[in-house]
Image (cartoon, rainbow, N blue to C red; front, side, top):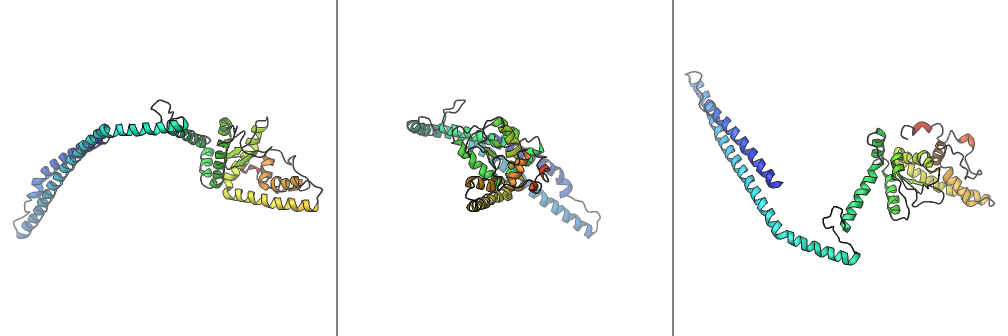
Length: 331
């Protein structure tokens, strides 16, 4: 493309130069030979001054035209040199490149049984080809959850990569782990419906789905799993998007505080189940979880320990139903 572009540019410059030269010639007589308005000395001096300016302009125009022609010639010469260098490299360097590539592929095949770079077939067979293909799939997956035909898709995209990015980064970590986790089972259809990444399997706690940023893992395949995703886990996705680092830091802080409270209560009531107390104080009582469980019409959760569970009269105080409609436009 470069030689053709240079040749075309040179032709354009020559055309412009011809038009400018014609205009200069047309203006030479009126500007270089201005007649005096009268016979007095002042009129003649003014006419001579303007005529001098006209001649200087014509001289400058002549030099500019010459420079334009030289520049066009330089472009044409560069185009020829480029084409010659390209032809030379094709003759001298391509065989060397081919030999180096063959040597690299031979070493790769000996080590891992596959060439480093494909051989030019429609579907690449090399390690590098596979890596590029996998990278393209990853990019398509990352942006495939956003419906850019709807304002909610744009809002989700912008929030995920600005205010909510700390959570999004944690989600990337989950996806990296799930890439090597057996039977992580990414669900593209549910991911597109929810507007977030959904793994039916993958890393997670037994009996619980886990959401980090815009990634939900270990959702399961039971009959109620889709409902849990759309009405509970998706609440956490939008909590991260709308509240950003406030959500993630306060959630983590509540987990720590709940662990302390649950353990302290157990020390005073050793007959109670320690794990159940800590789980209730650290997880079920977390206001962010109260919001999600209530949105899923599952409050109070059946697995919580009543000894430390929020009493029923506190439900309106803990974000629901007073703020239940906050996420409604987004979900």
